[in-house]
Image (tube, rainbow, N blue to C red; front, side):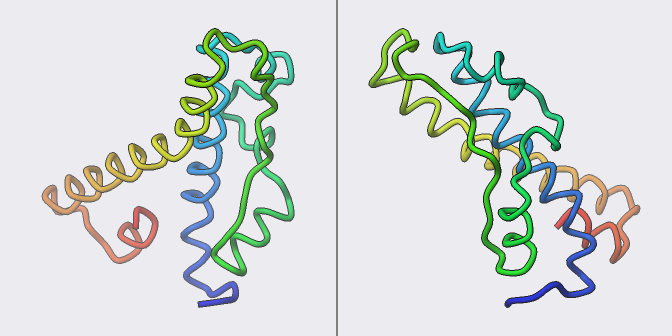
Length: 125
């Protein structure tokens, strides 16, 4: 359960992608709701360097629990503050759920196409 095993190497691209998509979704939702703070802070990007918190990434590898750098928002800039704060909060988890569904579909296509190997399975899983 804990520790950095050799199979964890296969997880690194997926973890970094999921973390970047998650934080980007928060930033995009905030901008769409009227707050330009994420754009001004350079966080409206899929660039993992902008979203990785070093300690959060290390914790993710070793304890299977981690975090990215929080996206700065200002709820005072939202068009509808109560609703928009909920939208921004849910954007990250919804993006991760969609990413998991897409990855599952890709894994199914790879399997049906006969391109499945244990390494491909480890990377996509």
